Amino acid sequence: MDTIPNLHGGPPVVAQAIVELKGVHKRHGLGLSGVQALHDIDLTLAQGEMVAICGPSGSGKTSLLNIIGMLDTASEGSVVIGRLLVSQMPDQARTDLRSDMIGFVFQSFSLIPVMTAHENVLLPLMLRGHLDEAALEAAEQRAADLLSRLGLATQMRHYPARLDPSQSQRVAIARALVTHPRLVVADEPTSRLDNGCVRLVMDLFARFQYEHGTGFVISTRDQRQFSRVNRTLQLNEGRLSATPTEARRRPLRVQV
Image 1 (cartoon, rainbow, N blue to C red):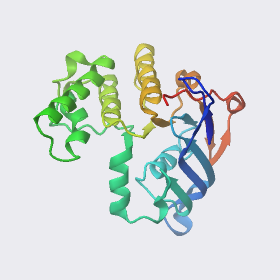
Image 2: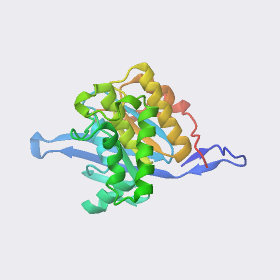
Image 3: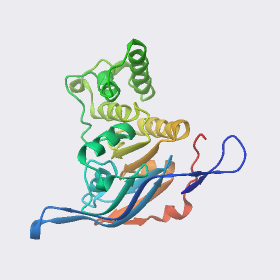
Image 4: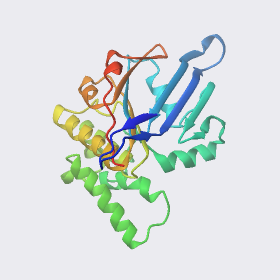
């Protein structure tokens, strides 16, 4: 657990762990052709913490994010998300929990081609069930506000085919945030962005940390993010270690 400065005065508060991995291994395939993607991973992420996982291609970053995001299961070890032992949950229970608490940013963006940018962002809220007129209006406004904050006010009605890679990546980021998730799992979320757009994204992430206590785990090789995260961890050949910046860990600062 982490100590968080109390923004309203008084003693600091303690941040509960939102992710706990212990002794996690991941193997893809069977027999001699199988690949060991992760080796004995121990990792704890506090609620409201932003952690960057860096490493070269093939180091296991996507495998680790898929396990944290409950898109995949560990071959060995325990995975606790939101205090629930998800490594022993049935598939449907993991799916429901994932929908309730996690937002994703995929490398491939995964936008729906027949939906506009605004509709793509709105989709996670629509999937939660029927919305009455007032709730639908509020959801539409939330999606529009996120797109505007990411510099996409004039592209809201564009379909993905009309968006360039930078715009598509920002739409995917807005979609991950629209449900105000407890945790965002982001795979190379700034790889297609210029410096101005990186600042927009990282400012928005920081705002969600502060206002909603959202935690972020980010797979990245983009050093422009490193000064904005609380911790940077290194993954090499499936083994996780602290980088030199781990010793100078930035404090958490979230609303309490």
